[in-house]
Image (cartoon, rainbow, N blue to C red; front, side):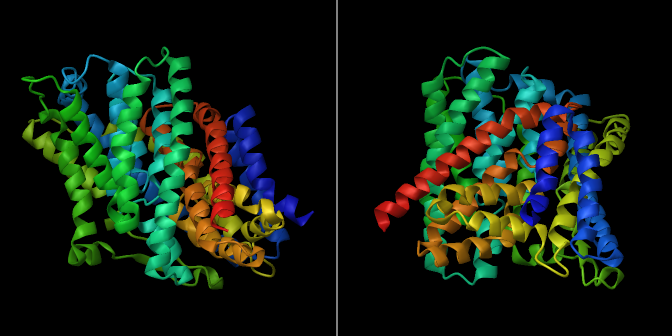
Length: 484
């Protein structure tokens, strides 16, 4: 009974989101989770602490959404978005090929540069400007983000999410990174096939599948190679190699591409990447507004405003407005969306925090979920990616999913006598895939794209994500059988 109660908030979120919509789902589930929080033995101080942490997390996400909308709106008012949509027309006559080039390449690039939901805040708007339907654009970008969030921003999910808390040796990190990348490259083929199906349903059947597979290979080959050597660079350099090879391969001889409209996004990428490469700057931006021992609960809350993409978005947007001599800043549209987003986003974040912090007098809800799945015996590796997905669905972060469930996955592997490195690789794959169905990502990306029907995105992405997790688990079982 206790295991069913632990799963109840997630079951309510998924079922009500798909049947009634995301707004009633998060409201109903937040009320139920609040009741369960006290049933679990937590008190009022812990509840208020979780509320404050939820508010800080919500503010962090809202800042990203606000910054992304501001930059895009400025570029739209200056005519740069219209120029950008035609800048690659001469690269290849196929509009769908340009769609996949940008959806795969830019999603991987901005995930590797910044993480933090940045691809969902940028790439769908570019695809929509190209003439593709909004729900399709958001769904596809989040599905691809589920592939490339494997190493997040400069390797954070594996280095901070697994290596640091579990005390893994460098050799184990290399093995986990390579295993996860190879598994994901195989899983990605299934995701790509399902994206072809989505595009065919929304637009028309994809005619250049072979060329899209070539784009995918351009990225995944360096991605897997660097996963062993330097996972923190795998996503960024994989994306750059893919974009560079694509231009060299597809651009007709003698044709010049006008890439000037892309300059603001190039500057944004540099501004986002610099702190990752310069330790002094990284330390400066690491300043945190922290709240210790909230309401005597022992819960700690904090926000690192300088690490948010908000300031780079705003800085580049102001630069564009200044260079293009925009008469006034378009603030009404970005600010107008914040209230509607908050109503859905805050309850969904609160559900996650209540589930995590419910472990006061007994294991938390998330611990009970992990324990339930650990009883699956020799079939456990098949379901290990689902734990990673569940962690990201609950927490909104690949890294936090690894922090929350990594130790449980490692202990389950040891107790079953199987390779803990393979199981941790499956956790990492699942945590990455979870970005496609994570409510935080869906709400943020859909809000930026001006989509009110959040459940349409979840409906598009849920089955592909679960099938990808199943395939990853089966491949993991096969790998364990081969390696013994």
